[in-house]
Image (tube, rainbow, N blue to C red; front, side, top):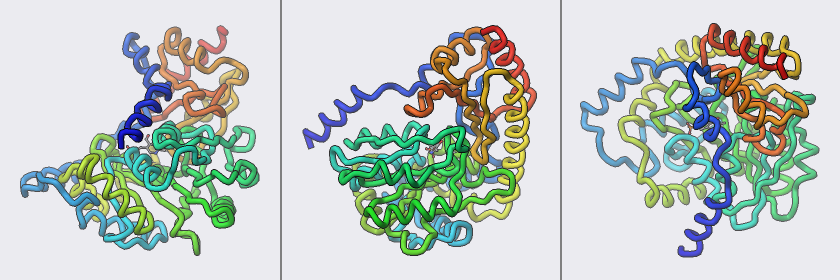
Length: 390
Ligand SMILES: Cc1ncc(COP(=O)(O)O)c(C=O)c1O
C-alpha cells in the first residue's frame, strides 16, 4: 500500500495541471470576457428532475447507499441500455453508479492496469482519459486523428500501435474535443482488433444524445461476442444538464464491477443518495425524451452557426462536428497556447489551446458552443478582428 501511495503521489507531481484550468485562471483576471471554454451545458437541469431530488430528500433518502448505487437506478439504467443501446446488463452484476463519468475512468483502469501497461488513446483526447491512465501507472500511447481525415479513428493506426504491453483502448464517441463520431463499421473493426489482441475497450459515451445531421449513436458493447471485453461509461451530466449532480455509471463484466465496488467502498462509499434517485426517475419520466430533443436541436442550431461563421475566418481550417458541443478548428503552425492567451487578452474570448488535449491537438483551438447564438456571434466577431491583426 505504501508503494502504491508514493507512486500516485509521484505521478501527481509529474503530470501537469490541465491547460484548461490555467486559462480559466487567466480569464478570471479579465473583464467583459465571453467564455467558449467550459464544457458543460448552459441549460438548467429540468425542474421535474429537481423535484424528484426534493421528493427523495423529503422521504429521508439522506443516508449511504450501496457502494454500487441504489437498485432502482441500476434497474432503470439496465432498461435504458436494452432499449436504446442494445446492451444487456444485469443490474446486480454488470452496472455500477459512479461519481460522474470522471470517477469511473480511474476506478475502471485500477481494476486491470499494472505499472507500465500501455493504454491506446486516440488523440486529441478528453483530458481525464490520459490523466486517469497515468494515475494508475499506465503508459499512454496516443494515436493520431487528423482534421483532414474528419478526425476518424483509423483501425490501421490502432493496429500499428499495439505491443505486447497493450492492455486497452479508450474510445470516445461523440468525441470531446473534436466532435467526431465513430461509425458502426469502424467500431466493428476496432472490436475485431481487440479480440485478436486480447484488449479491453473502454467506451466513453457521455455525449450519446448530442448527435447531429440524422447520425445515430452506436454502442460498441452491442456487437456480438464483444460485451465481456467492453466497459461502457456514461453519465447524466450532459444528457440531462446535471454536471453538478455527479452521477455517472459503468457497464462491465461481473469481475470488473466487483473490483470497482470494493475500491469505491474505501474511496467514497457511494455517490449522493438523492441525486441517484432523481437520476433514476429522469430515465423513467416520459418528459425526458422531449426535453433532451429540444436541447439537442438548440445545440445543432448553434453548431451550424458556429461552423459557418468560423469557416469565414481567415487562418482557420474547420471540421464540422457531428456531435457533442465542441468545435476544434486548426490554426496551422501558430502556437495554440500563445494564440489562446492572446485571444483572451486582446479579443476577450476564452478558447482552449488544442495542445491541452494531447500531442495531436497541437495547432488547434477548442471552442464550446454552450452559449446562446448572440454570444457566439459576438465572440466570432472578436476572434475574426483579432485574426485579421496577426
Ligand atoms: C468525453 C467526456 N467524458 C466524460 C466527462 C465527464 O463527465 P462527468 O461530469 O460525468 O464526470 C466529460 C466532461 O466534460 C467528457 O467531455
